[in-house]
Image (cartoon, rainbow, N blue to C red; front, side, top):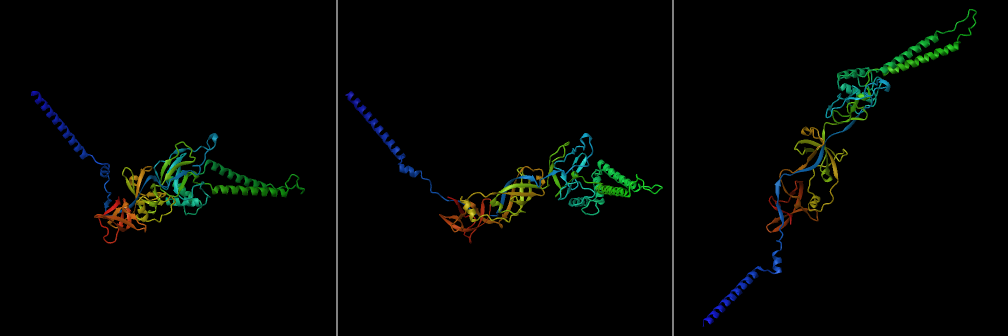
Length: 471
């Protein structure tokens, strides 16, 4: 009896376990079923959301169009300086003949040279700069004439040393002015050298000898004997006449040589002591000699005092520029100065371009990414007459900003990417209103900072409207 009860209880427990397991499996299946999805459901769940237009609001603001380029600061109008000849007169110097010329004072770098400034010294003599278009090419002294003499006379008169007139011929008045000018600089003017003095003495002796020979020829007439017969040793009248003629000719030649030498004898300006430059003042940029060097070849380079910026801009930007436009020049350390566009294209030719209105159909097409090749670069020169804080910055980098146009007050503006050009060439913008996107025809104006001015009929376009710039 007890054994039957035990069996009954065991069956009951087994049945409970089985029911529990079945319930648990059923619950697990139900849970798994709620978490499983079909491939179609999975694909549908991972579909991207429906694309919405990307919009930005229309703004109202003033626009200023600029061209910005990078360049380098340089001093303008570089020029090489060489001496046209010797400085002073050659003096004998031992076995070698004329003493070698040596630089005794070098040019001072960054110094300013005005008319009458001493550039350097050679063998203790000055090399002076004067304004003139004709280069120094010879020694100028008594008897010289030409354009170089005329510009020397003009320079002396400008400096306050009157020459007695600008005749183009070096006379006593010019010689006197040269002497006074040299004394004012602390030097003696170039007087006749020892060789000149010796040559003058030789020519004067030659004249004296010729005069004596003529007198001798004239006083050597033959005598007659008391019996009236001609002496055999006496010169014939014909021979004596020839001697007198020859003596006179020799005296004439000697006098001519002496007169010609005296015409060029006196105070001179040696070829190496003056350098004529078309424009002054200038600054010494580079010194090419040292003390003790022979002054052969280039001795220095000079530039104008103006600072220039050499830059390059795309051809499309160059079309918006013209000479005379104001430029803001900025260095990396924040220094600024104002300049002007002095040359476009590197040829000195003026550009007829004016402040361009960006925002043509070509601009719109470019905004859509359909543009072609970039335009060829164009060199640009900006002159800074008053460099101020930029004066010592030659050789450094600079950013140039050129204002090429501005809107008339505040205007409606949209990003350039919002412009679309239709087949008929008309520019349009797309505006999202409620659930619709509508196209509005616009006229384009100035472009700046990635924005372009737009004008629409009436109130078709207003500030704050959402224009489409992408999808």
